[in-house]
Image 1 (cartoon, rainbow, N blue to C red):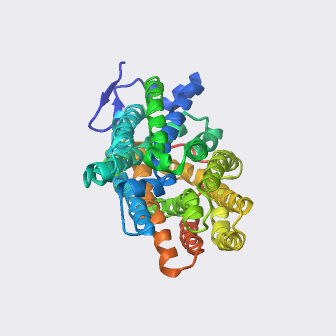
Image 2 (image 1 turned 90 degrees about the vertical axis):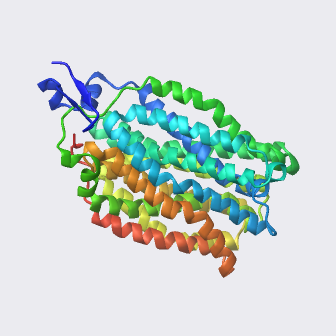
Image 3 (image 1 turned 180 degrees about the horizontal axis):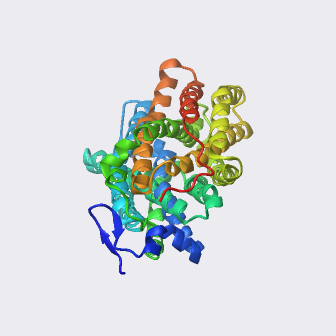
Length: 446
């Protein structure tokens, strides 16, 4: 019997008995999922995060170009506030594109997010400065950040669902950890480009046009990611689902899991974005030269790439819960002493060591977390549920993190303020993790 897609309930109907018994992902795995298909997911995800986080690394320069203020701190605060604007649209992107992925498929959703991130990055790369076009400049930048946020809000759910559904059951952790590892790769590439630009260009050239180069480089690679994703297979289920397992009704049934997931993601995202902020922190608070401070960005990228995969592997071996919980507790306990050490000894080796420590424990915990959450959700809302939890958690906590810590440092005069903020959010996330069940040995719900 032939199969047909019913867009009303997001499932394939009329399939044969054999196909109804197995999700598409199981059938694909039986035939062997080509590694290039997984690579397409990872490459596209990395490029989208590269374009998004590059803004954070060049916040000082972007602030001067688009947000003139009476003081350097005011300009920086405006710049990081607009960095946060990119998070406002994440929940919207998560709900809309996540639902689209659960109905139409993972592949079309991921093609859509690539198109959106391209539009947002064009806006950032090509907009003239405030000195050239006045108030239109910051307005265009804000709109570009909103589009980028929409894309990333809708990217994480479908791409993570695809990775899990493509994976052999005993390697779901390792496959899924590429979601976070690809973000580390994006950070690494952004950092290497940033160090190169700061080394090769004069401060005036960097301010005038140099900070735009990383965005232009990302634009050149996005068509490659788009081409790769066009060749992807589809992993959306073939088995019919009850109405209570899809759409808004399905999300409401899983509201407890999604709420806990928001708190879990909050711990990781605050640590992650404070880690990404270390370059700006080193320049503006510790008074490092920009070229040396950018080394923190490179360190975050390398460590996140490596330790996210370590976290995924460990979660396959020992379970998701201990691997996400123990590093989060370690963060809450050790991050303040680590920052105090850096403040007392503001030299490059200590900066890199503290940055590496924060990035490593964040990556291990984050990899296990991003795998456990969709494993708790049924197939019909897997992308939507993760997208909502991720979008809200990252928007409320990640989107405000850099602004909050910049403001806290200024108000309190305490350069260790970022560490206290990370510690508090990490403690809250650890409590949420304790409330979640173990998913490492669970069969992925079809």
